[in-house]
Length: 149
Image 1 (cartoon, rainbow, N blue to C red):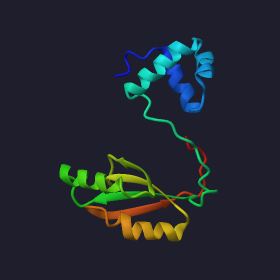
Image 2 (image 1 turned 90 degrees about the vertical axis):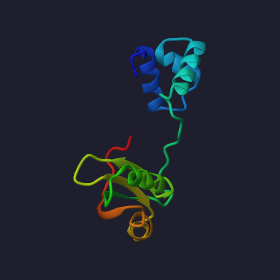
Image 3 (image 1 turned 60 degrees about the horizontal axis):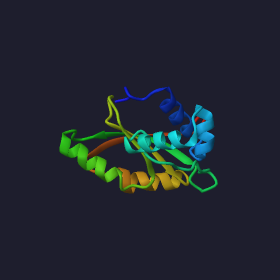
Image 4 (image 1 turned 180 degrees about the vertical axis):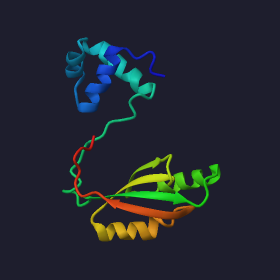
């Protein structure tokens, strides 16, 4: 899928990952092209799905949602219909920031962001445990974030 990405495309992607607010002029300067071809390449990278969107990195502590827990989830059923039901339900829980299917002794790893441990406990008891086919959960609370890219 990445066979047709050249060095400039990769530099564009790398530059935008570091700073998604770069102007076309700044991006053009960074990759050594003029604005028009860079803008054309960016539109193509967006259209082809290499760029999914743009977002702001916010200070979650200042927003009152600095508590992070990672939750291992083991399902009671791992047939396709059960996985689909779980996946669809996870998308509806705003506190679940990330959800990854894992090849391990458990099925999913969730990153859950809440205000504090009490709020997390409510989300775990009322929302995560109530997701379709959840048989067991294990929680790991992050004490400090060293790198978050």
